[in-house]
Length: 204
Picture (cartoon, one colour):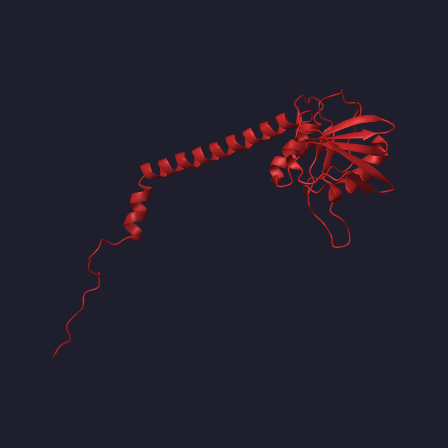
């Protein structure tokens, strides 16, 4: 199983009105040792009919014509039997227990098989970029779901650390009189008289 890197594996989403959005794909470098994953694909939806043509258009020249793909139906609500792509048709199959739900398996009639991590379409940019880098790392060793779990753990840990930092900063601020100072400056005790004193007018 070999892998290649697409020249522009953009995670960015910049588009123009006259051109389609760039394919969000990153592949392991050429000559990389075989691994469980050959790269990552970040589709914009879970619609295989809409998403596969752009993927096949990029991979056909690199890996030979893609003729079959398989998915796990867990995350794909509709699985078409065939998807028309540029110049040919890709047959689509599925395996439930046998295939990682976060993986897309691709078969080429000339060159063999490749496996791509499928990054969930709703993933935020930072996490997607991290997953793409990890999936294309020559030292990669995790499965598709392993990469997803690792990224989720990283996200949860980062959020917890950020919350802890905010809490610590708030504690320090309080210890230095922050809340007392704010309370004194922004709240007047109930029933307190205004500092201004009315002066009776002579003759009244």
